[in-house]
Length: 255
Image (tube, rainbow, N blue to C red; front, top):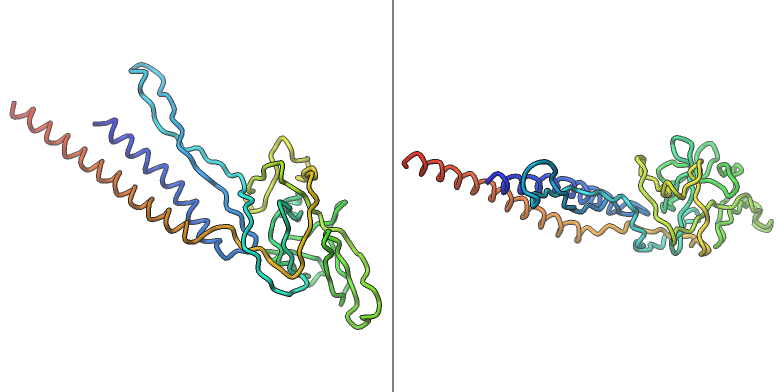
């Protein structure tokens, strides 16, 4: 009976991690550029020591690889909104000063003149450094990530190039989620400053559009319902196992 209870209890512990994953997806269904990750799986581990060789227990294996499946495109018409095409990511400055990456494209100009994302991460330029926008200038983007600035009061004067967005293709490599929610390259690929080597495909951007989250509320709710039923089944198994054990002990006392 202890084997049955142990198996059911271990399954409940594994489901707790899966609930965290589903909750995270539901919380970010409407987040611009959100990519789900944090998948879990069960792995059988042989129990060492004295006893039968058939003793195994299940261990939860977590995999926080970013799922780069695209989200729905939303047409906004705003000059500072952009979405990244294919498997491209945008380089930003992480809170610790390292280079990190994101798919979030709702950009704006901070009061200090820095080009930042919607969650206040400074956007980085190719070659290093943040992007500073001249005061009073209108910012636009080229398809290749070139940043242009133009005086709105002088429309006849051509826009001037001020920077090139730090864009990376990750079609041939994996990204992992950092503690701050940004993306980072695999340890064997990322450079000391957090940058990653450019991929083989060119990265382009589409101005005036935003990419939505690739998390599905419908899929997450179905998984949550299935998880709830599985939890109830495991609890029922533990209760029935207790009843069987009590009945066996009662029969032994009568004997």
